Image (tube, rainbow, N blue to C red; front, side):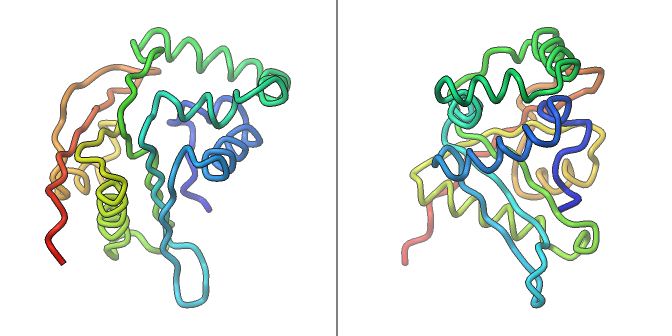
Length: 182
């Protein structure tokens, strides 16, 4: 899907194979949950990935044992790995708090402006509630205006601004209301 992270992602410099392995392992190992929406013809319109613990996501997805570590070290683009490490260290995001996070939301180009992102946010909120999570965070590039607008519309607020890899980022939070009684 064309919405997978471009050069604005922490993982992109590591190489496409590493990015694919990260997402596949995160889902397969239960470190993250993905909600998807598709068209009548079965084509993917969008997805949202959430995790109850962002601090555990990367280690559980790419570094869960000697085999994982070897695949990561020898499979990642070495220049990209250095670039990602520098971005992490210089942005103050090298250590991550153990908090629930909306990791990624992607909507296909053909589905943008049709409410798919809003529906995926609603699905993420429902899944967080189902998991008993009352509050979550996300990080977004300040310049990603359509995403920022969606997040504000869904009740998120900016907790802090920071610089990462030459980009201004927002760390946003959302307090989820309790699910209405059935």
